[in-house]
Length: 64
Length: 407
Image (tube, rainbow over all chains, first blue to last red):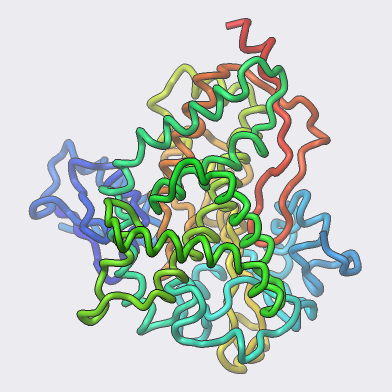
């Protein structure tokens, strides 16, 4: 499983990198970015899903 | 308070300055969600109020059909004087695409998590010294003596204005907030001392550049050129107008909540790690900010016959209470794990200062409950709420002393 942020949808609400700082970071404008290639392990999937469930812009996608 | 006639039916005649709305808007919004869900009014020259999350979200993201050139509802329809679209008087909040993105890019780096998080020690010191000033009092006014002072103190520091000018700065904040909807000629007169002071500060920063927001605005480039001084001044005004009573309201609402929900207060005192999640629930449940848009052209939209220049009141606080999106939407759940609230808006106009607002809210609550692990409302009926588009408690007497000693 991989997580990605759609940069067109992300508005820098700041929820993902607060909830899951090991998976997400922020850029110079404060928009969310995925750390590394976004591959999720069994351990990190739930945290990524929690971040996804808190994104007001629905900008986080978790895909096979 | 409004001089308008009292509202009898908010579905056909809403008024966000009606005493009933100001005192407790949530039952009104719930009623509208069930039977409307986009309310209309002929007041203010005509306008619409979507009460659902779906309605708010759809309009907030639709910059083709709605403009931000005026975000505060005035007494009537805006005139050409108010409307220098797409830039607006206070970019980027009053700007539309494509200029909006340019103006926003200029200020976002200063409000990104990196520089904002660095302010935490300064904010903590400010909160702590405000509480020092209240020492010995049994009833403290958490609205007028605490929450009200925190955002101006932080922004004074960010702009790099001298600490000893704080009283002068607070006076300017009042002039600006109270003058927002005054006629242009009055506003020019009222703003004269503000303009004089800001101009002097800008000159001082040009002569003595330092690591603060004023110097940043003076140095930042747009198309290879520094900003016009009017742009710098306009952005400073925006930061004052948008960053003061909004956060002050959020801090006050959180303290008001804890003052009459002792279980939540006890959990926060005992479980400090809960704070980040609790802050999001404070933001959802007590979202202070409602923003306006204007309809760009006549159209049938969400089943409503909208006319050009009709107001739209974007009730982010109402969206946050929509049971379609939030389980137990009308319950404050301090450890709510899934919380897709829209307190900072949705879409391209997401509050540029949201990282700062969150930090101030968290630190203000942390310092307050550290000093007063137990407190309650000294006089629930004495609490007053700000009318208009920013909602929060103003007079907020909190009884602290005897309760605190029991710990």
